[in-house]
Length: 395
Figure (cartoon, rainbow, N blue to C red):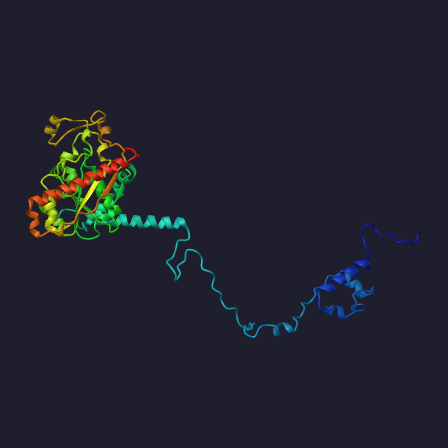
């Protein structure tokens, strides 16, 4: 009992631990390390001599095993073997999103950058527009029409009223020709001539060819101080045969409302009942130039200012054809001038051709009367049809 060797709990004998380390080195190395060639017991790594004790006391690095001779021979002949003396060829990185390729233009990588560039473009266009205004580097035609100002400023001011307030629905815009002159004839109503402006935006924003409507306006429009300049800039001109013929000769789309003040200022009880179309002067103009007549029907304008009365005394004092009295005006003051948000529909009907008539047909009163009545009946019939289809005045 006195000669027994005491081994602490959980500790292996030193010779067994050395044998395990030697076996681990033998598995990780395909050939013996140079240090194992010297000293007794290095061949097996399991001896108990001094070589085994040295192996157990230190961790030597094993050499990298040599590549077997058959690997290069196993490579396919059609693939070139890499030359270690030359650098690896540069491999192009995959194209990132937002870069230009041969298949299409560059697309922005970040939506914020796209929005920024769009705002930069708009800002540059705005400064360029102001520079042209200041320097006078812009064009107007013989009637005072400023196309650039109309497209970029005036239409932008009217468009919210058109799209968001009256929510205008346009039908039959394809009946307006893509090129050449045409005469658009429409009903007139609403106490104030907002229907003409809405019709102008409808043609400008919806026609596939981007046509512009040139309206013929009454004398009163060009007598008012500010309205006169704005009407000229927007392309309006005097409602006379001479101006209409000059515009049609240039291939413009001309808009006319033959009812005039009789339709604009009629009582609410006579809504959507067309008044007399005058003596048919617009038909004579269309016959002289052989342009089609496009009937236009507008529903929704009659209810924006329900005219329940007319103060003729005030109208005479102010030089107006009528002075409207509505449920809100003049009782609510300036607030009463706000139109009611009715739902509008503008429909352009089938064009009536006039190019098949001889030149002397413009002097035939019977033909002019028949064509005038045909246009009027087509507009009236379309108004009744749209009123039947309408669900509500406001929706």
